[in-house]
Length: 342
Ligand code: NAP
Image 1 (spheres, rainbow, N blue to C red):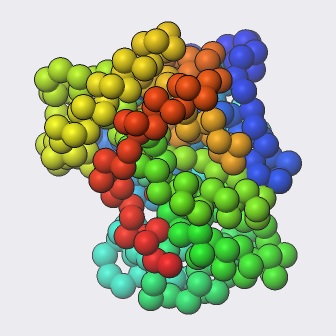
Image 2 (cartoon, protein in one colour):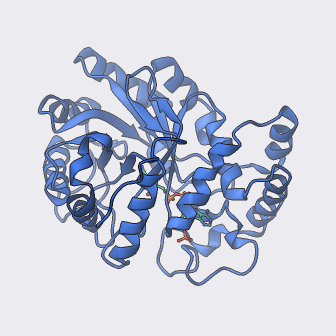
């Protein structure tokens, strides 16, 4: 039996999401890895408990998280029913559709047919009547943007999603999507792009656009899938994302150049009396446009360490200059195909 900590709201920082009235925790938890059927449900449960006890109210999912696809939502649904049934109004739950989910022509991309059927499936798997945020997971170059945004509008009007969002859209496509939805009376709450010290594409124009349009920003893979932690400073641990076969973090991304950057950044983190993971998260949060960092984890301890980033958020100009020497594009953006669509 789980009873949430009485102190869960004592230390977490909550930021308004863009110009909306909705606050997000500065650190949110994503269920992409380590919540599917191939991993331990007991560990998944312990991670959700630890997160909620630390004030993490936002849990991010997608239809295809697992493996197998869909199982992260089903497992999250089990944990909700078992432990958090009475806390639905304290939770912000998101899901998405856009990537490959089921066979045939209606199981991926951005058609109205796919998005609305997928949302219904997600709600069923999680045992929910509504999600707080429903995202278009990626831009679809072969579907009119009006159609994809129309599907988000329908989900919003049906009350199946309280807010809608975009993920990995370029600045230009974000503005177009925003304009379409605005004309229909629906605000775009949030954008979910990848952003980290080794993947800075959002700085080119997306963050400025989001700031101007009043859209909030939640950055995924802020630890570069674990590369921006101390775990790859030595040999690659077998039980790490890069150590396991067939995961989204290929060993090939741990190039000599990237390892040099990571080692140098680790030294800077030490002078700040933070772990590298904590500095990587504080660094993403330094930009005023950022509402939340969306972390992943494989243990409750990692979540505790990562939330510790909030104890030291301020950087001096000298520290930022020093970080800039090493925080350079490491060719790790696996989602560029979507955001490259200009
Ligand atoms: P991340 O925070 O960059 O990486 C998380 C991984 O790093 C963990 O699973 C763990 O891997 C390792 N780690 C975390 N904290 C650590 C620590 N303190 N010390 C050592 N290792 C640590 O984020 P991510 O998992 O790539 O993505 C986070 C979330 O973003 C996802 O769950 C999902 O919700 C979202 N996302 C969205 C999209 C999209 O297209 N919208 C794409 C990707 C992700 P080990 O297994 O090695 O321990």
